[in-house]
Length: 440
Image 1 (cartoon, rainbow, N blue to C red):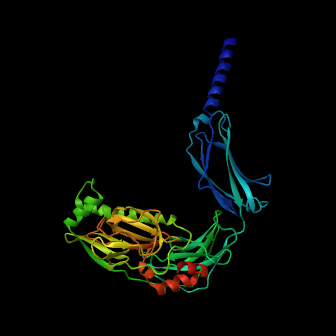
Image 2: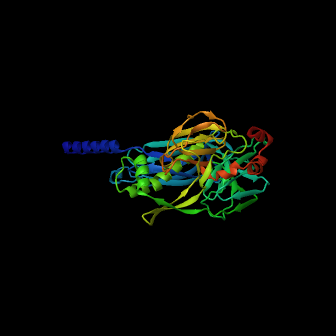
Image 3: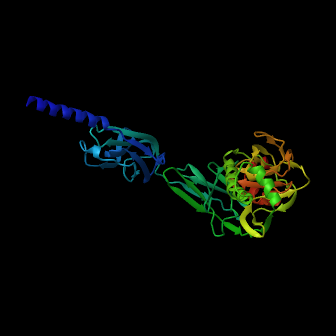
């Protein structure tokens, strides 16, 4: 009897040790991270524990006081937890003053704690410094008249207030950043924004201010759009042209020549344009340009030309040409259209040898199909300075310059920036004297 009892005790001990050993902790991740909480800020926590959690609690600590905002409890499974296999899950709750009325604006700490639903009952937690901000953002736009060409751009000034961390302009799905207005009143900002060529008329631009709690203020301003009808042209593809450009851009590719070209024309075009858009983050927060931009050659193709690609009498593709094709003589000197800093000079797929110059506040000019560079990344260049030579690199059938401009990553019609009257009326008239002086 004694031996049997000893065996039972030993089995219980071994079983307990085994259950304790296979007990584990809980992985907690807040996605997206929470930096501020307001009246009702959503929080999403990814909870991963194969045995589940017995308790999940969240609270906000402020001035030594704990304010509980979430508390979920489940039945304990201390001895049977090993039968359970739970997938990671997302738990959502709301944190903010609506859940804890004693919270006040200022610094705080959000803590999330989980107790594993096993024998050990291990406690794991994550904590974040947060800002309690219950005062919503506000924004007031200027009283100017804003006339915008489809495919073109404008400038608006505005003043955000309250608690905000981001402010700018929204036009449909597009967002444009803002900057402190040079020489403006405290808190006054400006944003240059586009009404993109591919956005149907009917969208109303608006200024906005937002903060990490998710609160957003918006305001409209006086605005009139001039819709544009862009040219549609057929572009004949010859085998000689296909062999030239495909061999240059995709020398190690496989498949039929026309299929390889279409992949370049569609997929690579999209990637290259995204790479250009991403350069908006490499900008200086000051005006680098001076006066109107320089037109660089004879126009062969216009901004936002819609091209139907024809191969052996059949339409095989349609793409939009963002920019101007400008021709002169072969290996013609390409000059900087205005003062700025070179931020990119490299091969860029369909654009071939491509250079991008930043002119400040996310305004940038683009030079494609160059045969060679005569300026380097990081160099400050002057208006009219030779920066390269025209060529036929990339998707170019002959020697020319592809020229385009973009504002905060959205390509726009450069023609406006060639016009000193447009520049004075639509841009400089809305900037304060300090910026106007810098841009002359």
